[in-house]
Image 1 (cartoon, helix red, strand yellow):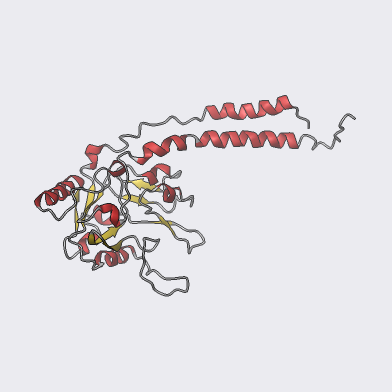
Image 2 (image 1 turned 90 degrees about the vertical axis):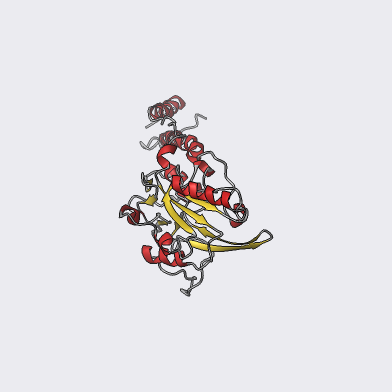
Length: 292
């Protein structure tokens, strides 16, 4: 079989022509989940000024989710210093110039989550009730969610040959049964409040207005389009490890790049197809002569 430059270009062009038919239109994702509907979603308010660092929430999370203790490479127990595949909720301590404060780390359950937007197989899903849940049976292990999350929440089971993604699921099963999340249920000081997002925002702003011990800011109200987990603190929330983010939902940012994926795949495919035909043009056994 022989192929000349014209045939090569026709092959590549045919591939690109077919690709044009698969172009994905950019959706209007600004209101991916209507903000009015989000007011009725399940929400958690963490009041750092009420937290005493007892870690009852951390223990309750592990018990509810049947998570093993964190261990080192030799299998010896160690206190986790960050979220991992076996630790979905973690209490950390800030001790600095502005004072001392505990802070609770867990999934923020964004109103418009970046993790669900980038997942190519819908292994992560934002439910109407509020929780962002994970479907392990769909996951292909690409870990795009880990790269996309602005809060660095999804973690992989690095110790497994087939690592799954692990993260807080807002106790979606408990919510479905009319119960509150295990961490909120276990908190002895009222540092973790639970209700609708509208109600939790009202509680947060009411506390800020009633006393001067709070920073005048509800973290999570507007960050990346808003989250269902909210924070009020006595020190700057950015000092507690909460990232500084703008109000734009991340799916608005990442979708144009995802939309380009079919084009990239198609161009590479067309190029490889053309290259294959070109490099195998003499496979019929005919010798090539340079015409000298």
